[in-house]
Each structure stands twice: as structure tokens, then as C-alpha cells.
Image (cartoon, rainbow, N blue to C red; front, side):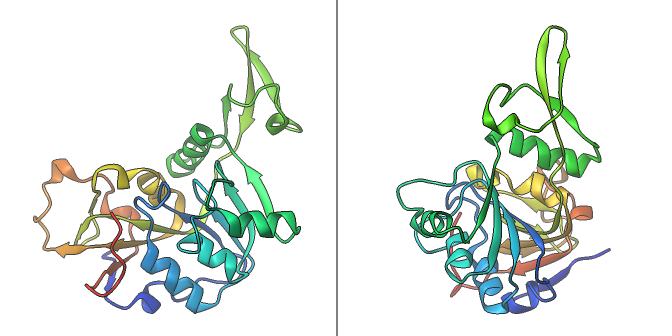
Length: 227
């Protein structure tokens, strides 16, 4: 199916419902879909579960969703850093739930969702509070923890360029979590700098195939620019 291509951020995030689980790409600000996030703040969906590498930077990106009171639960690897004060305030006040996931495990749980894997055993977090209540198994003399995939209702991701059927390429480190999130969501919405005709992207350079892409926001010059 050919994705919807729009220049309107509100149209790109239309229909995202209260209580949705949303996968948000980016590593810090690199590869974060800022225009889509800002549109979601305006759209008004609430009670959201956000899955992202970290819990926000300053008051932009996912921090804007947090500050607007739209997030019920955050799933991430790095909830606190010097400028994550919005999340810190909400968490200390008991206004948001946190699920802490080691970074490699987070990436693999997302990849497993896209690959149709039911669960997997991982040695990370064995013997720590993050393994409490989880099934463990000894395999070849080493202990492992059972981990389940993370699936999203929606993924909001950032790519460098799309073609008109939705094939994507990324720019350098902005690639990060975006490809695995694209495959792990029921509906993937991507923000790009440019849309080219079919054939305008070398097939050997495609990272995310069009089958995973549902909507494309072509960012205009007056929208945010982040790699």
C-alpha cells in the first residue's frame, strides 16, 4: 500500500488515540521527529505510553509531551540526565510510571516485535532489580532472563529521505532506533526532509522498506530541522 504523503503535521498524526503506545525514535535529539511530536501535543491524545531511548531533553521533543501531561508511562533506558528535569519532576511527584530497560535489551525487544519473535532470553540484567519477577533459565551454564517484544500502536520516526512509495534512508547517527521502531509498530509515521520519485533512492541504500511505512510528513522549511 502506498503511504499517505502530507505537508501537514496535524494530518500526519490524526487518529492517534488516548492510551496508545507510541514508539518515538531518536538518540537524544539526533533523529528525533520533532515536528511530529509537536503536532501530537497539539492533537491532544493523552494517557500515552511512550517508548524511547531517553525521557526528554529540556522542554522539546518528548519532554513537551511530558510537560503537557499527556504521558502515563515511559519505557526507556536513560530517564535522567542533566536536562531531563521535566521527567524528573513528574516521576518524583508520582505522576508518571517508569519501565527501565537496558539499552541493548530495548533495541532487541523492538527488533523482536518487528521480526515476529514471541520472546527471547538475554543475560543482561541478571541478578539486578530489573530481573525481578521475570522467568530465568540457565543455558550452557549461563543464566538468562526472559524478555518480551515491545510493540507499538504507532511509531513516530525521523528519516532523511523517502521515495513516493515509502522507502527510507537515514542520515548518519540519526538512524539509531528509527529502523527497528518502524518495523515494530502497527502504524508508522515518518518525518523526512525530502520526498523523491521512485528510483530516486538506490535500492542498495534503502534501510527501511516501504512495507513498514504508512504516513510520510514532508517537513517544510519553517518546521524544525534536526538530523
